[in-house]
Length: 195
Picture 1 (cartoon, rainbow, N blue to C red):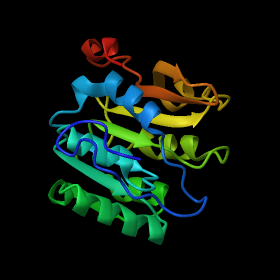
Picture 2: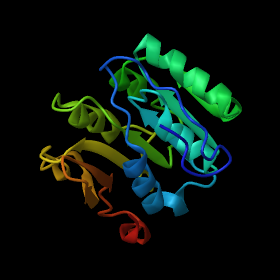
Picture 3: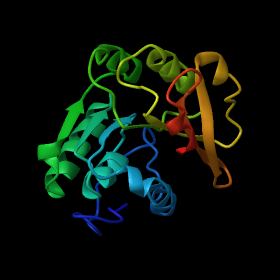
């Protein structure tokens, strides 16, 4: 696993041993960041279920103002900190050792993130629980892009019920990236054309 582009381009990243984490492959990461590239410079980025930190580090390398990493596994937290130090990106990073829903709830009251990324363990319903926690939370507003990495057959039919809408669905075979924003009904419609 490596950083694809930006200030830390081509630097290798450590990964967590064992099967508790599942790093996004370089190919899929590159495709994702090609899609969201215009939104990265200067953004505040939240990386939930961070694993080795590869997604948040990629965002920092490409010019994100700040990335917050949320991960509850102790070994993974150590790897994230090592990767941030190696890539010289620690000064713009916050690393939080906490369960993801608790972390999202604890951040309520803070200003919105520009991008929230989550890559939870597959098939356990974490996606819906995080979106429920974001529904009435200040860290996600109508301009926040929420990116979800999930199995290709993961059900997202509940999005509208929770006040969100799918803006794009990028499939890679066995998995997918779902691009979600808050529903814009009654809000500034200028954001409706965004990803």
